[in-house]
Amino acid sequence: MIKKSLGRKTYEVINVIVLLLISFIMLYPFYYCIIASLSDNASVLAGKIGFWPIGINIKSYKLVFGYKAVFHAYGNTILYTGLGTAISLTLTVLGAYPLSRKDFYGRGVLTVFFAFTMFFSGGLIPTFLVVNALGLYNTMWAVVIPSAINTMNMIIMRTFFQGIPDALEEAAVVDGATEMQTLLRIILPLSLPSIMTIGLFYAVGQWNSWFSAMIYLQDSSKYPLQLVLRQIVLQNQVNEIIGTVAGSLTEDATQMVSENIKYTVIIVAVFPILCVYPFVQKYFVKGVMVGSIKG
Amino acid sequence: MRKFRRIIKNRHLYLMIAPVVIWYFLFCYMPMFGLVIAFKDYNVFTGVFESPFIGLYQFERFFNSIYFWRLIRNTFIISFMGLVMNFPAPIILALMFNELKDGAFKKATQTISYLPHFISTVIIVGMYTTFLAPENGLINNIIARLGGERVYFLAEPRYFRMLYIIMDIWRSVGWGSIIYLAALAGVETELYEACIIDGGGYWRQLWHITLPGIAPTIVIMLILRIGQLMSVGYESIILMYSPATYSTGDVISTYVYRVGLVDADYSFSTAVGMFNSVISLILLVTANTISRRVGETSLW
Image (cartoon, rainbow over all chains, first blue to last red; front, side, top):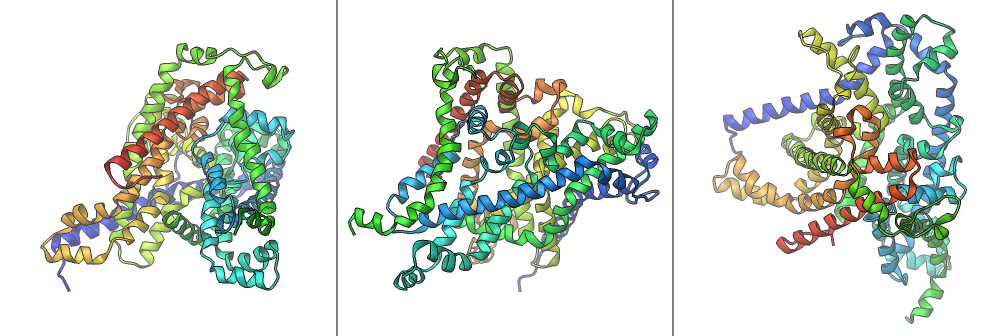
């Protein structure tokens, strides 16, 4: 066992301290939002919040959940995420499987056809005009379809499919299975981990998306959560919440409540991700590692 | 097997991939064809083909516009600042993680560092904006407590670029470190042992074994990054900037958005966007070619 020098040991200690600091910087913003949302307004405004909530109450949560737009937007986001992930996964699998087959004539050409789009694109306006020309403006499809396929994800999935032994496919053919049956009965069950991973990538992307919704949706009833969040936190439309739910308030009171509301809304929007994340993150990490090394 | 027979045999595969090809055609390639309106005076009512062809007029408009140099300057400054500060950060973080013994602490810190990547831009900028607020923001509260004067950070042009870079690092350093960690794991341990036997200390090992070991990964990531230089995170900038900070924060991609979707000057916006994409492509190909000549690693 090689003895570690004092310098080496010091370095290791400093390493740990720095990493602790980094972890703190990553977590503290969320923590602050949580405690600020649970505190009473006056303390938040006075800047007294540091590590503990003061005057714990859930008034602001009641206000936020009572605001119909938030409620509605939550439902929209869940719908878009579910629908979007299903569509994305289906298209990605349908594209990746043929590409993974060595005997698929035209494989090289199609791969270039798909991959080229990663390096060059028409840009914002041409895409916008195409989507509108297809009649998707102000429909939920505009949020879900134009962004359905991520070429990188499809390549990663192709790599996973390529890892499945040919012998299995050949056995299926011998048994008289059609391509579709081979895909559904044999390949998919075997690739479940990778499909789950890619599915999660798409799901998180769709949950967090807001730009497509902003440019294609006109009815605010169709807005997803992130867009409503943007209105409240960044465009200061807090007054609508307070106005519609709490009746009329004096201007001071409005100012007091609005700071609190911002933190509350942030937590409401981020909470599902924070909950799901610890369980799900290992899939992401593995997906990235395999995808990047082999792909 | 003859080509024809292969196609017949695999006909179902073609059926499978058909919707995918259609999707790419509709949403990737048709917009590319749509770039042609950059050379026209596009009118929504007359349509793409009927609108008059005006050549490079829109491009000249852009080059002669008072904003041209500002946009180029901002785009390049923010991109290069990002490159210099944000590119090494995940590598350094990966090296730090690599030092740790496997265990709960290592896993915990890594997991925590990936978290910001999964939070939406809106939430991140939302938190950022709220913390930087002049009256009640956390940062200003601390400054006031320490006796300083409150600053309206996001309204001051001189702070914008730094603020954006800091946010970008916070967001992406953890996730970015994954790739480098994987590369670090791939460096053979015998090399380290040989170095130690030869009397090499930590820094020697780092310089002669570790860094050369992950060099191919670094080069590929660098090339990819250069390919994205021009499209400098426009989503987050749109959320963060305001007319007060256009002078330092407005980049080409945000200008494309404003001019195209807010002012509805479609042809002009497309021309500027096309300029952006073409420069991006040139940078990417150049970086890849240089890398291929100088070393052995390249994207293609």
